[in-house]
Length: 131
Ligand SMILES: [Zn+2]
Image (cartoon, rainbow, N blue to C red; front, side):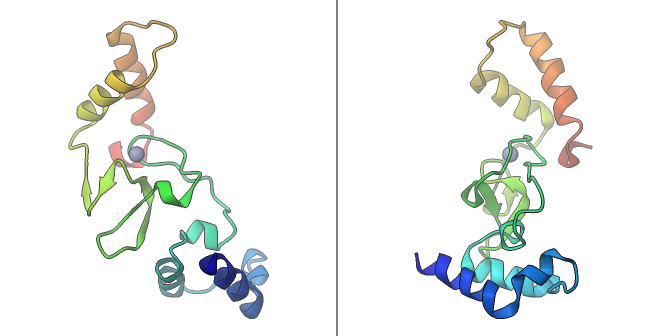
């Protein structure tokens, strides 16, 4: 629990609440440093103002340990750790991701593969990575 305590302490010692009011913003470099040091995503450091979603597969990133990391250990908050690992994207094309989803996601409505493909394609096309 050492990490938690240190983060909490950092919050009280430096007036973390002022960040949320928008009065002072620590610069991005400081945030990156803290994020790496404490192994906490920047979003969590800032009090989770954003609902993070993986921009590759769309999965909600509700826990920091679902978020991908750069090879140097810094969080990459745009992607889940299943889509982006060791500094590289796992799915080279939208089709390969759709293949994976069709093979692994439940299909409660028994849609045809073609319908599911169209559905996933429409959804994934809204994500930054596939635009
Ligand atoms: Zn993903």
